[in-house]
Length: 422
Image 1 (tube, helix red, strand yellow):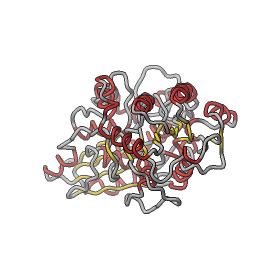
Image 2 (image 1 turned 90 degrees about the vertical axis):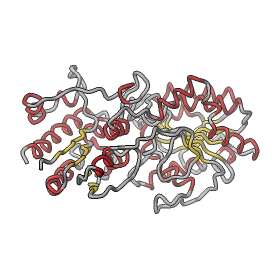
Image 3 (image 1 turned 120 degrees about the vertical axis):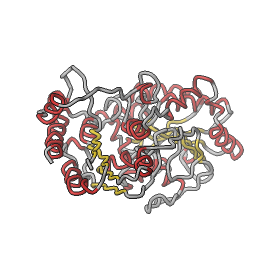
Image 4 (image 1 turned 180 degrees about the vertical axis):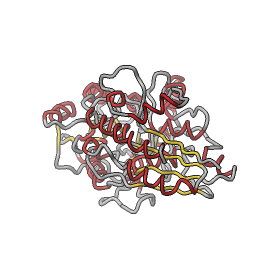
């Protein structure tokens, strides 16, 4: 019987312009040969074609969800936008539950998440509307904990968003309490030493301090530190009451779960990871925009159910299946590909190749692609269907380093050649 291999080349897109186009500028004889000699088609991977609002860029999570579902999956972003459009967002049950608890206990509400217009992990408008809702509910003590993006949007682009946020906070008497880059607050590779620094800042513990968040951004830029890598820092003008403490409540406004889980785990003291917070805090209510798999939070918006993801279809058909990816994309070929469920199917095997422990993949554009290919060639003949992911174009492209991205694509071409000629 013939074997089938689905290779997801993450972050690789097609466009005519060559300027800034790592794929077009790279030496790719294997890709060129495949495009020339074999049938191919170009598909849409953004907006309404993958269940996102019109004009919204796609991302890895959404792409794998749609591939695995075999149909359009209407994502959290679409559901939240609908609530905003019909005026029901402020009355969302989870938000009201948190607001009531904060008001009853005269505690502090903490709103934390990625301040970004990107729409990949969060959308800044969701935060702004939460602030309006909190004010309408009569809440007096609200602290915002900002995570800088710089990956899904330009590396130095947060200032405009920070100005908008600052205006709203000043209007209502709320505070921007902390600022941290997503490198720290949103790690997903169990680098808990990074996450702990963001966690401690939210508790009010950091040697790095600022008096004005906008000035802090300029200060970081002057040190050539971009949004993603902002040092976790606290507002020195605020009292301890403005930082997270026993009895307070939190709304994490990131709707994408993968990079929200580790920080959430520290706050709710879950059993999802072995690592525990060095300074535990008892949070009364912890709400998340969407379901964070494996974590007991108050969920604001439920995901669309996917009853027959690809893994289940293959299992019911009696097929043996193999999944391979490096750490950075392992969840995508398993959890997201199977409809947001972490399921080990019968007659299946899952292989995770360790991602390199580097600060920036611009320094290691080859990533773990060779190891992934090695595992495929070693195992694939024993399985009917293999689903695998190469992360290089996505992860290296996100660094904004064009030369490294060109190298990443060129190296990936050599690995595709190994597979094609196998």
